Length: 107
Length: 429
Image 1 (tube, helix red, strand yellow):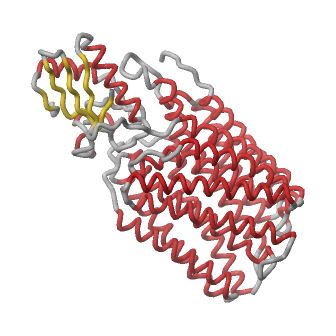
Image 2 (tube, chains in turn orange, purple):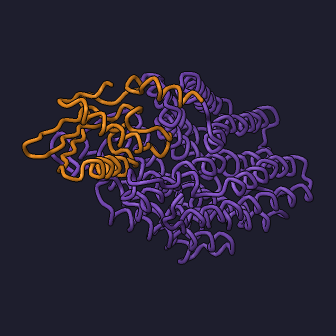
C-alpha cells in the first residue's frame, strides 16, 4: 500500500471501496492506477480527507473519476463528511501504476 | 466538493459544446459520399470542376474541420492544462460554420459563386475567427507553454489564412482583383489547408493523445519541435515559391521538408507504441495508427505529380485527383473514423454516468457503440478507398461506382453508430 494515511485499518476499508472506481478508458481501478495519494481520518470531526490526482490536468474524464471517488467513499463511510482534494504535485506518471495494474494492462 | 491545490473547482468543456460538431461532421461525411458518387463522371477530366469543388469542401470543411474543431474544444484544455475560455463562443463558432458550409457547397455544386456562396465563405471565416480568439484567450489564461499547444495554435492560424485566401478567390471569380486568376492560387489554397491546418493539427493533437491512450513512457518534445519547424518552413517556402517563382524543381524543397516531418512523426508514433505499458491496442486505435501510415501514399503521389511536372513540363490530372481523394477520403477520414469512437463514447458516457460512478456497475464507454457496426464500417471503408483510387488511376468507371458505394455504406454505418452513441440513455450493465 503506497497511499499515506493516519489510520491503516480504515484506509484499507476506503481502498476496498475505491477498487470499484474505474478509469473508463483503461478499465483499471483508481487505486492500482496510482491516483490516490493520501486518505486521512479525523475521528473527532468525523471527517475523511482524501488527496488524489488525475493522469493529466483537465482530463476529460476527470469529473467522472473524482465523482466516483466521492460516491464510493460516501457510501463506505456514511457517517463521515468528505473533503476531497485534487492535486498535481507531484504529477502522475506511469511509475504510479501498481504491479497489479501493470499485469492488468499487459493482458 | 472537489478542490484542487489552490481551491479552484476543476472544469472541463461541457458536452453541449462538442456534440453538435460531431453530429454535423457525421452528416457531412454521408453527404460527401453521395456527392462523390454524383461526381464519378467528372473524375476522368480536370480536377477543377464544380462537383469536385463541392465534394472537396464538404469533406474538408463539413467533415474534417467541423470534427476537428469540435474535438479540439474538448482536447485543447488537456493540451494547455487550462479551461476553455468561452462556451458561448464555441456555440457561435459552430452556428456560423454550420450555416456557411452548406451555402458554400451549394454555390460550388451549381457553380453560382454569387452572394449565397460569398456569404457562406464570410460565415466560415467568421466561425474560424471566433474559434481562434477562443483558443488564444484560453491559452493566455493557462500560461502553460508546450509544443502541442504551439501546433494547435499555428494550425488554426493556417486555417484562418486558408479560408481568407479561399474567400478572396471566391470574390476573385466574379470580380477579378487579384494579380492572377483564381485557378492559379488553388494549389496554394489547398496546401495551406492540407499541410498548415490538417497536418499540423493532427500531429499536435496526435502526439499528445497517442502516447496517452497507449500509456507510453515516450516523450520527445525536441523531436516534435523539429517537426513543427520543418512543416512550417516547408509550407512558408511553398507559399513563397507559389507566389514569386514558377520553377518546378524548387517545389521539391517543401515536399522533402514535409516528407521528413511525416517520417519523423511516424518514428515518434512507433517509439510510443514500442514503449507502451498498455499492451492490448483496440480497433479504434489501430485505425488511427493506420491513418498515420496512410499519409505516406498521398506524399508519394505528390512526388509523382512534381516528377511529371519536371520531366514532361505538365501536371498529371489523374495523379492530382488521386492525391486529393486520398488526402480527404483516405488519410483524414481514416483518422476521424478511428478517433470518433475513441472520444465520442467517453464524452457521452461522462454526460450520462458521471454521477453514478463508484455506486455500482455502469457500462463501459466502448459499450455505447456497436462493435459489429464499427467492423462493417471498417470492412466497407478500406476496400472503398482502394477500389476508388484504382478507379481514378485506371479511369475505370465501374471501379469508381463500386468504390463510392462501399464508402457510402461505410458512411451509413458510421452515422448509425454515431446516432446510437448520441441517443444513449442510462442503463445498468
